[in-house]
Length: 102
Image (cartoon, rainbow, N blue to C red; front, side, top):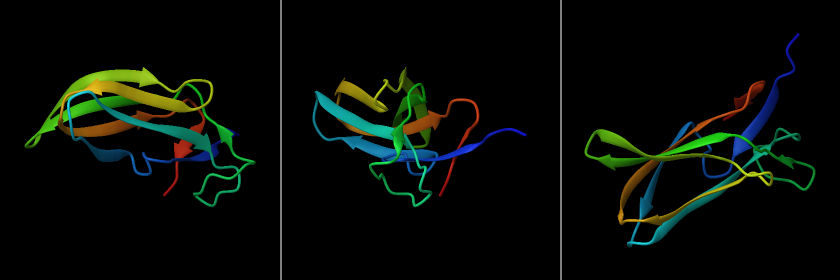
């Protein structure tokens, strides 16, 4: 039986999140954690999740263009820096044996 863990993404609460950089040199960042308490809120007993793939897309109208793809650090943090002003969408892919919860 596969051990599936539940987790929540703070700013990636859903699989896709619209984001916006308001000025050149902007930043979009957040963190990912394993929601051990299953309450969809980060608690001290929840562990940060490393190696979740996070992709940033520029959105113009209905068209998405991949800007960058990174993985979360050991502390679950990700950050896209020095972004030009514009509309963006973030998509995440979780490590094996994890799933999103809503």
